Length: 163
Image (cartoon, rainbow, N blue to C red):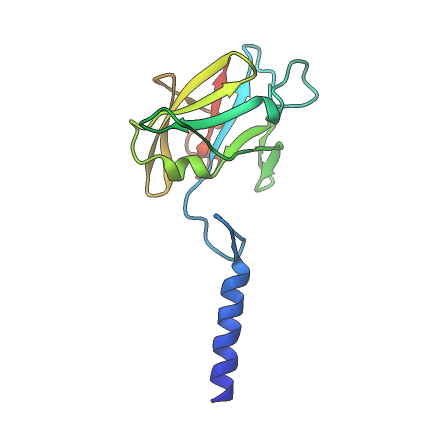
């Protein structure tokens, strides 16, 4: 009987240790893929890179939605650094990453807002199916994927915004 109680207590403690607010830790499966957005200018300069003149600092970026009463709800995001994937594929650009926005997107008709700096405002609409972003519309135009389609499921989820 003592062994069963010890096992049950260990499972209970492990379950409590895995939950961190709204985000899950590495021992729990991620329920949705994040929105990953590379932001470039017309000459393919990374506008999220702090080494770029005129880059968009995280504090100057807003990602939000509005409810029926036009009350703004901020959506959490982070700026991810360039990375290599599977030692063969590489993303050379910083990305705006949000795990919250795909979760909030119930249909492609839900509109979210991305404000870059003082005056650039974009409308975002996402089509999410089976916890994956199938389509991203920026100002009602389908966004281009950063990596060629079919590279792999993770790289297929990185979109590009050119301004």
